[in-house]
Length: 261
Ligand SMILES: Nc1nc(=O)c2c([nH]1)NC[C@@H]1CN(c3ccc(C(=O)N[C@@H](CCC(=O)O)C(=O)O)cc3)CN21
Ligand SMILES: CC(C)C(=O)C(=O)O
Ligand SMILES: [Mg+2]
Image 1 (spheres, rainbow, N blue to C red):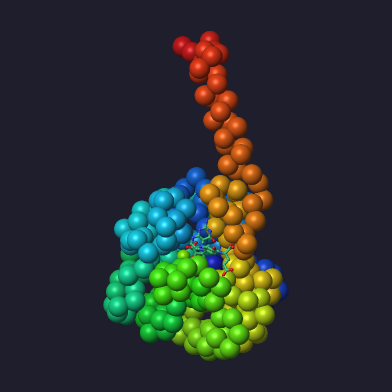
Image 2 (cartoon, helix red, strand yellow; image 1 turned 180 degrees about the horizontal axis):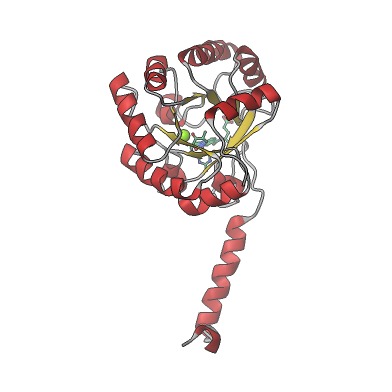
């Protein structure tokens, strides 16, 4: 594979007009698959809570969970930039919490961290400590209890404050930002208002790049979302294989002499 992707590369992609391709992963196996597909950035998302751990939201995910999945994903990702989410509770209360948590993720193998919301002091302090930070605005899932569900944010006049926050995240030193579940027109206005790459999920095609949850892309998620698309029917495919296995064990045709010693 070609040269490793770095934070300056991601920034430069916007200037060159090349869309940034991002996907989540939570372990070495799927991290290596995403890397082999040539994505630019792999996010160890706190969506691991919903997707793999069976939680209803990302709220219960701990820093220990994120460290565990970051170490695993690090083992599989060789080329793409590896970014890890700061989970709920690990950065909001103080700047020292934020830097401490971010340092731990970096030691686990992340090359940058992402945090949700309007936390410019935390972003400044991490950047000062040498840790690149990705912002995340719009429908920030760690605030689901405030929103009353995973609902589109920033409709109508409420969009203005998101534009203002986006500018302040850039000023604080964020190298890019995720825009989640906001009107496409608002995402375009934010993208015009900042000079760092905007990475959309449910935020239209006017962002500098896109991110999706890997299991949604692979058709391995329980539900389906308007913002996502399954590019392969993973669950159907895997179920076929598992049903075949079940059948041949039951009828005694597996293992054969070739599988035996
Ligand atoms: N598998 C998975 N994919 C994701 O994109 C994802 C997660 N998990 N977990 C963390 C957050 C939660 N996200 C969510 C969760 C639910 C909706 C949802 O129910 N969307 C509605 C539309 C919402 C509206 O119209 O306001 C839908 O119909 O898809 C969207 C994003 C995005 N993230
Ligand atoms: C979907 C992305 C932006 C995320 O934060 C996650 O997967 O946790
Ligand atoms: Mg997340």
